[in-house]
Length: 107
Image (cartoon, rainbow, N blue to C red; front, side):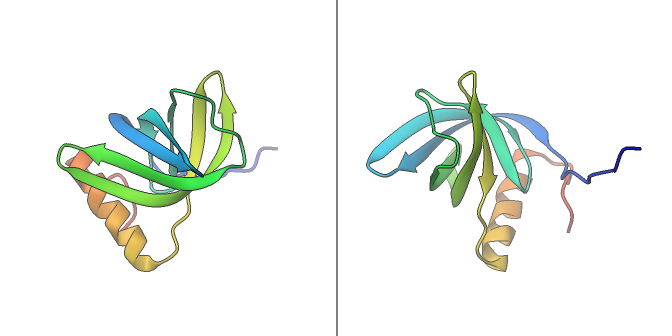
């Protein structure tokens, strides 16, 4: 018997992003995002388990958050957001609202 695991709603995007890992800035594109994290390719390998500062860009607006690389396969990373406060969660939700007119996340 399979257990049901709830997964936060995700949606497709095409957002430029960068990941600061130590002294390196690695450029990428977010292709899939939710409240918990994102998925996308980077210009160079990002080691699984790495922690850094991720910035997403949408026009003149950006969202910056601490992030943890869960995995990196075939040039594509799965990244989890490390939200440290309720305010960071609210800031993330406000950024997500800019990306889609239909609310796909919990309130």
